[in-house]
Length: 410
Image 1 (cartoon, rainbow, N blue to C red):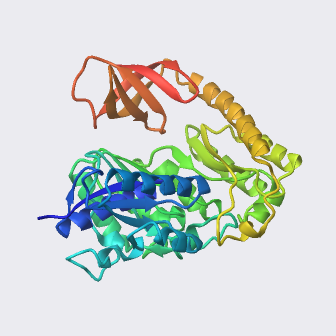
Image 2 (cartoon, rainbow, N blue to C red):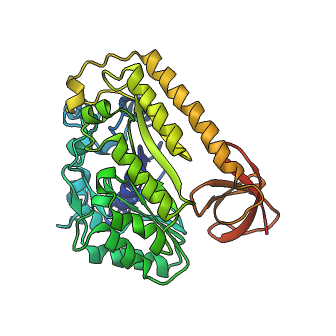
């Protein structure tokens, strides 16, 4: 009788992509997927970026044990060394994602890197393709170098083969992934990899996550003009607008450096959609420091920003600093930035009204189809037409909010 499993994924797209590879490896080793309350094994693919994410895992383990007292808990993903001892007491297995192909619970072990595993994709038209893992930057607040290790790039040939196979199968949206994707250092650099993929014939969009400003070269920026499949969307974390805080974060650039990059990108492609990550309440972030962040957000006019309240993570340099900003103040600063972002996003979306744009339909909810524009904005489409999921369609935008567009099919 086959052993059964289920997977719960926490965190970013990289974790979701890893879960797709975990599923394929498990099923090739004789496991069968089932509901959580009947599974022999529950795999929790962790994210340790914020303490709140780890806290959710603790609660989920307790819940699973109540639902199914025979289930074996397997923890993997991003796990900090200091948290391993605590988690061992709650879990039956604590397994390194980098050693996926050699996990002791597998019947068919292989001496290969885990990124070599063919993923069991959850979508028939969108795919994440990891091209590297780990990070060498050691930002003072970040756990990734301690959970994922140093940067390791996949062979260029393997990436091109995987992407080509997806395009032949009809996949419409391919996102290249890495903790620091634009530092890819395989047989060629990252811009050259984008250019090689762009030459693969087909009707598809190409994107990438997540970039570091220090690796945002002129050659890479130029790709937003020359690569026809590369969508006009760039997620470029700034984290803070204060040079003092950026230095304390070990980000290796100034706010002036960052602004120069953004201006270059906008000059190459004026229609580009910009998003970012920002941390509020980093140790010793004064009101002046915070005002610097406000100033740069107003200058850049992001379409989206993922704003997080600082929380110290074990093993990081920032853990040793005095977390002197109160929870209330962090919450207040997050709210201030969110309100600025709302106004900026609304102003930019107003320019979309009455425009006809290409949309990739992703799913259907009630009477509406939900999709993405080429520059990565959410669109809601009301229509009686059937079987549109996974297709490109032309949509005229008729209504907007801060975060969403609404349109009709042309």
